[in-house]
Length: 443
Image 1 (cartoon, one colour):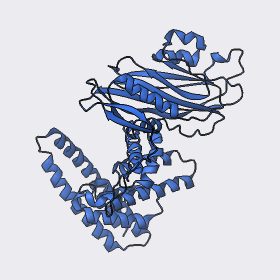
Image 2 (cartoon, rainbow, N blue to C red):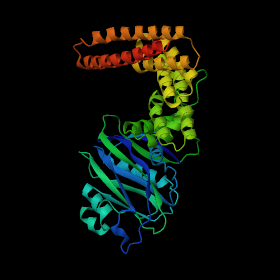
Image 3 (cartoon, rainbow, N blue to C red):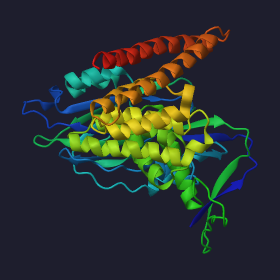
């Protein structure tokens, strides 16, 4: 069976987009041994998310399992984008036709059976969550919107359709109730919004035809390489990149991690954002590390991000080239692997030598601190300390001249940034001078 899109003469047409709303795991503890267990909040959990403007449907996928164990992703977003031609946006003559495509995608989405006995309540008023968490469930029914049905299966999908596109964003509040008396449950919930905006593009309708002809995918042209791959790989890369960037916009770093992992390993040239945002994702993982050895594994990954960014993007960027990336790498290495003084020193000095007066203030300060550390370890002599200090002082003086010039700009943004940079410059200059003064006093 092959799904194709064909031109339609319809005048009314909409562009649909599939936007991720939530992709999270929730642990809900077992209920207490009370005569009325629904009167206690220890077996309940709740969260909220925003429904964007122009939403015509919200689609959920959920699965619950007994005990506090990870629940694999349900692939809701990728499953839906696959059913609309391998992209996160598509065009259709009207809202109902577009939602039919979504329904087909849900029908094809296979979600494993759950094992945890959970009720999921959906509310449109925040007050309902307080009632739900602290009182009997029956007392919060006054806030309950009948069109947001109770989900009481162990796994499944649900679509909430709106008659017209949402004109003003609003919040939906979900309450999770564990009805088990002995076991905690882990619930994975994924939700996306389907938004529809009138489009001036050519309208399409989808027809299903039977064919025995195999689907042909694009093959690489000899001597030519695409950062997104080719054919099916290209569609997969773009889907993952869209998902990744949407989660990053929401600062949902844990949710962005699965997409980032694939992009980083398989499509390292697709976008600089997998490196700039990848740093934040890995630092979040470091914060959540349970042991020092686990954290050091993430430090290795962090260093790899910087190395691959230099390999694939340094040559194409003037502002964020090798000097900039090395500077960031050196500062993070000094912070997270304090014993690697030799390596840190070499990285920072190369960054300073390449970047000159464009070197970031934090890099200069860390380079001076590392210089003193190298001297104390007997790795460099006093003459080298003096040489580096003079180099750093010269760079700071040049940067100060430039910032003072920019501070006279009529552009308010330029002026305010220059004023902030001047304040930073003064702090770094004082810090570098203090380190050097302490060094000379000890001679």
